[in-house]
Image 1 (cartoon, rainbow, N blue to C red):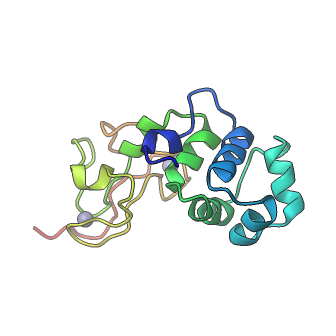
Image 2: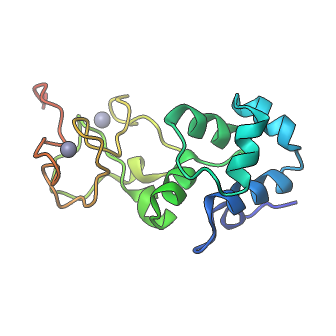
Length: 156
Ligand SMILES: [Zn+2]
Ligand SMILES: [Zn+2]
């Protein structure tokens, strides 16, 4: 029985394949069960666990995370090679956040998907090019220059 969240998180040097296999064993489900739950072929899961696949599409990530009861951020983190602690904090509400200022703590909870203040879906990426938000000090995406704030007029 694993109750500590830190057990669920990928270890610093754990690979995607090791992490998925470990989580699957901890959840005590077979490859077949996980493949079915995640909606992927058993063969694809086998490849994934052998380290032959390192990129996952968004849908697979979402379903794998749900099947393994882990936050999707953990999979995102391990796929992008970032520490989980950093990924968890880089979410923002495109309506309420004033780019360049500290984010509201209600967005940085890893389970939060929607802004508790206005109900908008939280973002972690630039809407234009998909580059992850690298710092809350940035107002614009360093990659393409798009503002992190949605263009709709902000009501005060
Ligand atoms: Zn909001
Ligand atoms: Zn961008």
